[in-house]
Amino acid sequence: MLDRMSDRRPFTGCGTALVTPFTVNGRLDVAAVRRLARRQIEGGVHFLVPVGTTGEAPTLDAEERRLVISAVVEQAAGTVPVLAGAGGYDTAEVIRAVHAAHEAGAHGILSVSPYYSKPSQDGIYQHYAAIAGNTSLPVVLYNVPGRTGSNIEPATTERLARLPQIVGIKEASGNVFQIGDVRRRTPDDFLVLSGDDALALPVMALGGQGVISVASNEVPGDMARLVEACERGDFAAARGIHHRLLPLLQANFLEGNPIPVKAVMALAGLIEPVYRLPLVSPSSATLVALRAVAHDLGLLAEATST
Image (cartoon, rainbow, N blue to C red; front, top):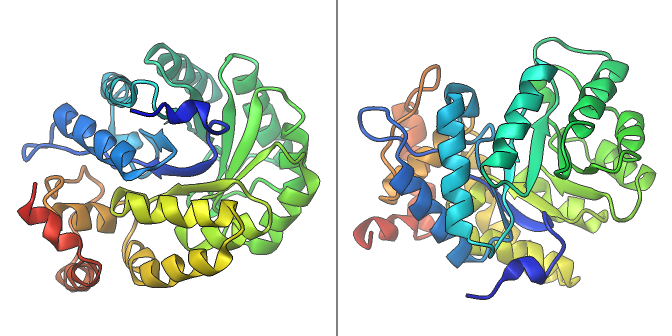
């Protein structure tokens, strides 16, 4: 298999924020983790992002996180890099999680901004500076104000970009003006990745280098092709893919992520429809809508071939 890690800069292109599969009795399904990782690689994605928000990381214990990261790294086998999630509001605990991810074989860290505690901008800076000072791995910031309750402001991102270990940001603010300002303020080689599938195209048009995608769990090949079209400047092709996928990108957030994406993957026969509390199965109305979108994209056919 082609070693795609030698073909492009790590953590550019389409990275998949992997869901975490569970068995019917709620246990971690490591065999399914491997199958999903292999499907992503075969689908053409450029890097893998286990144990993030989409992976229900807050419900995984330390050993489960280690098992997931190790399984994904093992399955990737050097073909694509692995950017492991490690975030929280206790800086010391996050540093321990970063060390554990490194030991499990991760090639980089995606770390969500501290949530709930609503730190000041200097507090956010000091949090990430402490992480960066305690690892040799590259660190990608993750800004998602809708979940954390605070925003990494562009000036703070600019300041953090001066630290050698901070190599990029996953921007999920949904604010295109802010994302453009981040791109303007940071060096060209600082990674600006869309944290929203529906904004992947505009973010790349602004000079971003890719997306960390939820939808690529379902349609890895399509999302990889969308990003590659943007990379070569073929925005007409990218728009065609975007418009075709838009109903799915919208449906994936009919309820809190990752409820819809896991439901679609279950409809496709890829995983069991199992969540850990406080997440629960989608409503019947959401499930009907998801089934219709999945049918229109031909995703239900996977259920008969897996």
